[in-house]
Length: 254
Image (tube, rainbow, N blue to C red; front, side):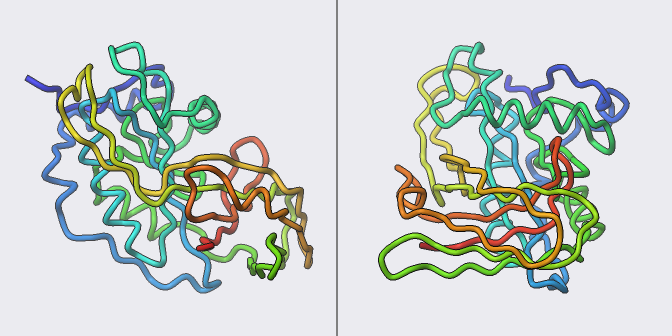
């Protein structure tokens, strides 16, 4: 019998919440699609899904992420992690950087904090079990939408200029995230052995373009960064240091 509880490791501050996680049934992921108010700033709320091909509890969250990505007020980013590779199947999309980011989020504590899969982190702040749509809906409603504004202009000969404007009392990094809009993987072994899984907006690469601290500032992206192997879309993410809150984001189709 397959487990129905989220795969959990080094849960830390999530222990108190874990008692409520064990009944995160896949049927919940099939409930009504999350709807949100249009962001006042025109920027989407960022949903980062930490998942693994080796976790039997993750497919419902992967399916939910696929549906959420159709909502223009949300930016879904899938971040496969590495720590379940020991269960008999090495995740073909996992990146150690994703694992380290999740651990950094967990170290901050707060709602839903911990290192487990599936997990969704909303705007770099609150977290929830990745298949619990109701909890995710609540986090999205409470997300701060008053951040900076991002515009992007592509150049005829390749490359792009990104402009970040607004006010901030905090330093923030400005990153380009290369994404694969759709990945299909046939799992050969492990908890999901024999299954074919689908993933949405999977991180292929990330590049920090610089730092921003309020006012209008431009960043230049070279054409080479817009030719990442396996990527067909890109996102700009403005985030406070130390895995802090995401203050702005924008999805860019190339």
